Structure formats: structure tokens, C-alpha cells
Image 1: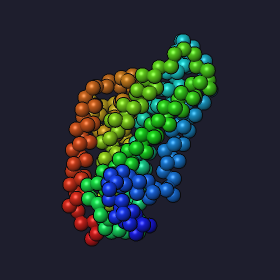
Image 2: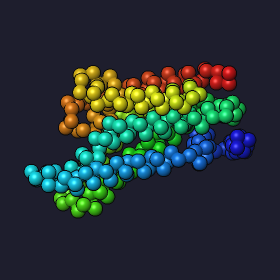
Image 3: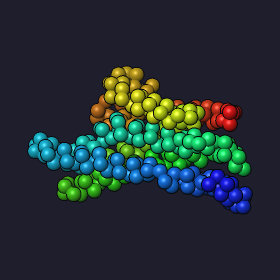
Image 4: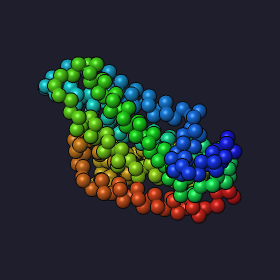
Length: 260
């Protein structure tokens, strides 16, 4: 496969190199189940949330609560605290695993492309898969609401806006796991670390130090201030953390002797 990919780049030098690299990265994941996991996992969580809502329908609506809000809340708590960070861990770990398996880096780095382009293209693909996951969650909530015949206008600012904000503040998690995955040959390292850092998020979110713990950010963004005392600091903090980690990771990737 690597000879074919190398040949494609040589004979299509007139094309945009980043687009070509993205096509190559997609080809590498052709036989991976990561896309199916990214698509089905959030749909399953929403199905469970809607089922829980229907099971306790009288309890959730006895005070005239908004049905759309109840379905969303039943789904998003588990999704933002556990499922989304774990899926990010899985997706970003796989981005490194496809190269670490069978010494793939040795072949990848013989391609006539800059390491910077390879680093960026792999991250773009990983973050795009995470975005697909977010979209599936949003669509699943909308479908669930229609299936239970939720009355009234759809609160798009909550059902669409909050998950999209959670995606933005998830970038520090994405880049941290991504850097670990391309620097350790064993996939168990990024998987174990990512899952291990996800589990305490609920406890940390209840403390004043949550702003320093990126794994709490998705839940804070989707809570809309309803679960915990939130702050607008989460957005500049997440951007700053992402930029710093991205630059450090790129520098290490460009200077590290991966062939050794």
C-alpha cells in the first residue's frame, strides 16, 4: 500500500498536498471500525436517554417541564462526561495506531511530504471524525424528540448550540491524546491515559479547579450553567491550551527520530 500511496503523491504534485494527505489518511482507515463507532455510539446513548424519559414520563413532566429539554438532558449528561471524551480517546489513539502497527512510520516518512503536513492532516481527520460524532448526537436528539411527539418549538440553541460548543472546547483533549498516540508505539498508552483522565471528570467538575482539567470542558459547555457554576473562561482557556499543545506536539514530531 505504501508504494501505491507514494506513487500517487509523486504523480499528482500539482494537487493540493494537504488534500492529498487527507485522502491518504482516509484510505488508511478504510477497514477500521472507527467511523461506525463514532456514528452508532451517540445514537445509542440518545436511545437510552429517550427510553429512560419514557419510562419515567410522569415524573419528568409533572411540573410542565419542556419535553425537548428533558430528552436532551437525559442524553447529554452521560454523553458529555463519559462517552465523548472516551470516543475522542479512541479516535485519536487510532490515528497513531495505523502508523505504529508494523513500523508504519518508517514507510510514512519516506513519502515526499513534510512532517508538518502529515501531522496536521492526521489531526484534521481525527477531529473531523469527532465532529461527525457530535452531528450524529444532535440528529439523534432531534429524531428522538419527534418520535415521542414532543410539543412546542425545538430549542435549537440548546440541542444544536451546546453540543457544537462542546466540540470546540474538546480540542485540548483531542490534541493531548493525539500527541501521546504518535509518540508511543503501544496503543494502550493513549487509551489508558485518556480513559483514566475521563473517569474523575465528574468529581473535578464539582471543584473550583475544573478550569484546569480539560476533561470537564465538554460537560461544562453542554450544561449551559445548569449543572455547575460555569464561566466564559472555558473558551479562551481551551483555545490557549490547544494552541500550546499543538505547537509543542508539532515541534516534537518534526524533530523526533521516529525511525529509531
